[in-house]
Image (cartoon, rainbow, N blue to C red; front, top):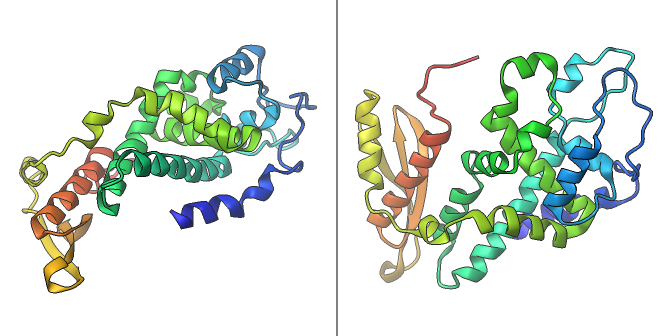
Length: 277
């Protein structure tokens, strides 16, 4: 977890007065630059539970990069939400990691990491965003809006993380934690999240067969520790594509973890699917 904290503290200067600190939300917008309306501001304050003091941060969090492409050359070109997404991703990882660390004091790193990946993957974040109605408040370029980017899993997940980044800069780590507690953790069935499934390898084989792929191959890539307390790291691949990695005290358990990681990947970003524009 130290690297997550280092990532956050290295960005701590962003909380100074030079980042989107117009505060009152009034700017001299020309062209079609996005402007937060009162309804969106009220929606944000309902989500965060506090007044939005640095309102331009939230405008940035809701600005999809397609907006920049559609604005006239002589108009204001606001920043897209990509930098805030980067920050929000780190904040979310840290707070979810801390929650799991405290909730499961006997779980090893592999199980904690596996459970975290079930919560913060793109598909889950997009689902959280949909429940909040986030897509309705996104600033989207006209051309992208015609392509249904507003309901895109990727756009929703990115904006959800960007909102977390904005809350962190505006309200600090306590505000971000409050938001994540109310809109992520409160919506989870944690028992279901951590429930051990013993058929991951079977599911992966079924996936391979249904997509006319060769059987997944498992490989022990590392053995660590003394003979009586070894830890095995196993990778699973198909057609030369690495799909997942697992680490456990038994090879079979490491294979199951690798297979689950592979299924999470295949359910969100299938590397064997035909390329799409």
